[in-house]
Image (tube, rainbow, N blue to C red; front, side):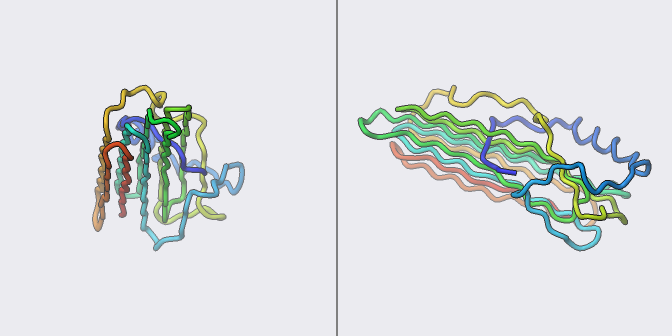
Length: 223
């Protein structure tokens, strides 16, 4: 799974997590499957300790030009439901740049990443958009995911990764915001519910007037 996309800061609907919990409450009727799922090369997965589910989601965006703007939005939620644990999150990063100087091109890039350990099922979807003109550039990177760890059970051939054809949210076109100066903003939230949980975030922003804007962030949850 290539993580080179982004979106504006839309929050993950709470109903997504609720529907997922309802779905996995009927897991006892499932048959174990070892194939028929799309496995993503750059979705990092590791075999963590038993009953340990960890997920890190993040990204970055950079814009270079006389006027530049970048933004990042991350949300990561984890909960221990007794018979299983669930993690839901998204990362959205966007960059826009404009250059009015002769011979100077505008540059914009955005990307996201996901690292999940200890999950039995991982459902993920990503969107990548980019535009580059003679004086303007924009980039968008969005990643949505859901991971489930069923306590006391593991797939025979390792974690099952499923790629969705459409996003949980509604991505919007990039490059429609007016630019003035250098601008950077980021929002990162991590929340974990259960015993012996961990939730943490890290974010950085940097701007240089008439040159560039940069942002990166990550959110980690573990239970």
